[in-house]
Length: 75
Image 1 (cartoon, helix red, strand yellow):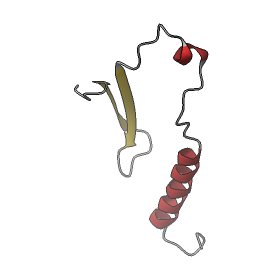
Image 2 (cartoon, one colour):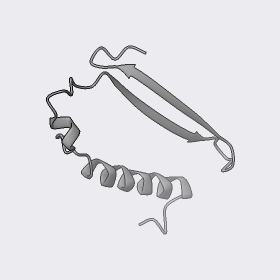
Image 3 (cartoon, one colour):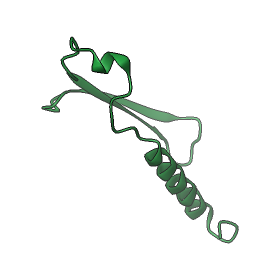
């Protein structure tokens, strides 16, 4: 029960639930008209973003962005 857990454990449980919800919303097939266009040759790049707060400080954070070639996944 989150009411009896340490604050860190309760936060971890909330994050785990949120991650499960996000995972359930992943779409694994093409859904856009442009993806079905014969002129579309496929993905050339993929990107990701991460935002991490400094432990103990909810106003300072570090953000990272990476763009990789696809399918080689080279930066």
